[in-house]
Length: 146
Image 1 (tube, helix red, strand yellow):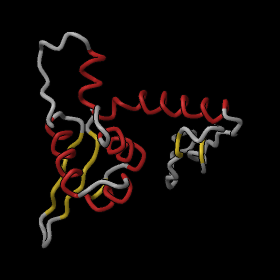
Image 2 (cartoon, one colour; image 1 turned 30 degrees about the horizontal axis):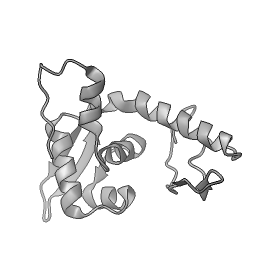
Image 3 (cartoon, one colour; image 1 turned 180 degrees about the vertical axis):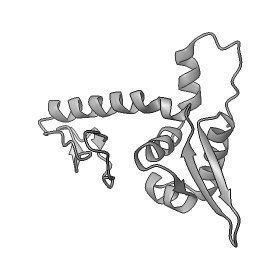
Image 4 (tube, helix red, strand yellow; image 1 turned 90 degrees about the vertical axis):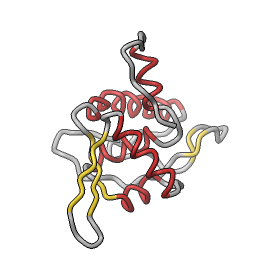
């Protein structure tokens, strides 16, 4: 379901939540933030259990909102690559805060948070959350990403 942006949106928090709500949008933006530009099939592998139809719809919605952009290079088949726009890269602070929050959850559960990436296994003694094992990506020196 597409989100429309209007001047009448009086609360910036509400607008941000509407733009990034849903099961997949944050995951899509996170993958683009941590990995840089991705082609469709690579995005689908990294995001997880998402159908091609759903991924296509979410990418179209994020593009219409100005969060991501799509480059198409001619060829047979054409090469298509998705990347965050300047506006989309504004989500960096959100991802950093979520990473810090996840590390505090790991610490509270007695697990040592790893700067290389998320922990493995289950977080917490009551199996409340399943940790998602992600590949770590190359980083710039001094730059820490979850």
